[in-house]
Length: 343
Ligand code: SAH
Image (tube, rainbow, N blue to C red; front, side, top):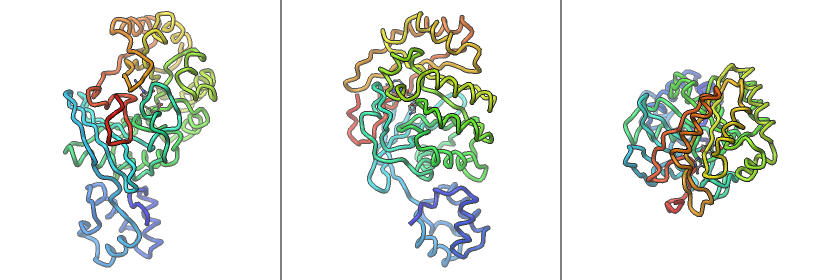
């Protein structure tokens, strides 16, 4: 059985032809998927025979809500159970410009960053495109909202699940799919250099790229993120320069401020030097506490001083609003279990 939500529209057209149906049926089915129906029986403009054939070859439901938590700031965290019993989390956030969904792309994560709860839970498998898209569909249905922004900042490393994430982005972006503009879709990566280069070469894609940098010094970054042993800061920055050259798109560098580790004014100067002249933006994140975490959050005073120092040096920097930390829905706090024991 195949997941009907795993296909782009043109792939679904090929599928329909392969089971002996007319190509145009795919458009009808696609429209129902994005009207968010849960069964083929609800697709009332299809014949009984076709519905039967679809049921024999495909399934449509691929996740269900196992739990949800609401934050006092309005953020909602969903625990979704996939068909194989594995769980993932997704977050709905409300901003002035609209609703944003933070989606997971893997069950667990291989990257091992020592400040991130998702790294603690081990890696199980990557999600399919349909499972990624369904998180948005289900959030829209549950909360009765229209999502206008999607961030790949939930569990998993999107560039380690490249093909499925790209297919999901095409479906999210398709006017006949979720119809969310590519500029409203952001991918965050810990810095998988060959994949950043591959992404740069996909010149039709206009989505935003965010790099989890967290330090401009190799020894510090390696102590926080094992991936830095494989791809040094210089290699990551070179790949980013290539990306900017190819796409003309501004890159966002994420920088989680940790007290006494990467938050001095000297660190700000070092970072400003590294990013000098680049088409970029720095997003400062006050580090969120995780269970048995070794890091403490920098004081607000230090965070603002760091931001001001970067701005003074000509690097645009802002502090990310903290949403959902009371329900462990903030950056780095997502896990895949029903036990909320990550705090
Ligand atoms: N694997 C991707 C997506 C992960 S989460 C990546 O590494 O970019 C999105 C952001 O949250 C990343 O920048 C990540 O480094 C950051 N993050 C992880 N744990 C955090 C924590 N405890 N506090 C603040 N930010 C954290």
